[in-house]
Image 1 (tube, one colour):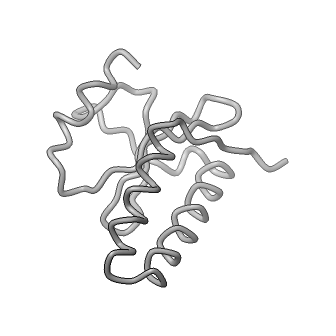
Image 2 (cartoon, helix red, strand yellow; image 1 turned 135 degrees about the horizontal axis):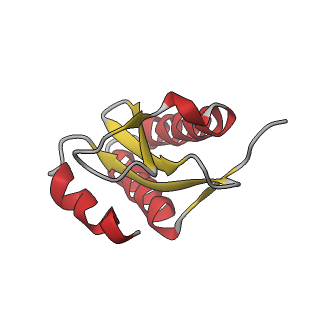
Length: 103
């Protein structure tokens, strides 16, 4: 049985903002990114254990999966699988994920 996934409002906003940023230079590349990030979401939902725990960034409930220069943050134990955020790896990740401590 195929597991499903949902995006939090934060993750939806992240994907839209990334698409918008890429589209400033190329709508075609933005669409390619969108398609590939959603394929990654489907892969993660089908095999939620493939991600990595990053205790230096968030608690064990959160897993991370790289897609290009981005990290997909999700919770594997939720049904449907919950995509929490999509963040560029060059950001100050500790500060970004500090807000997830209580999430």
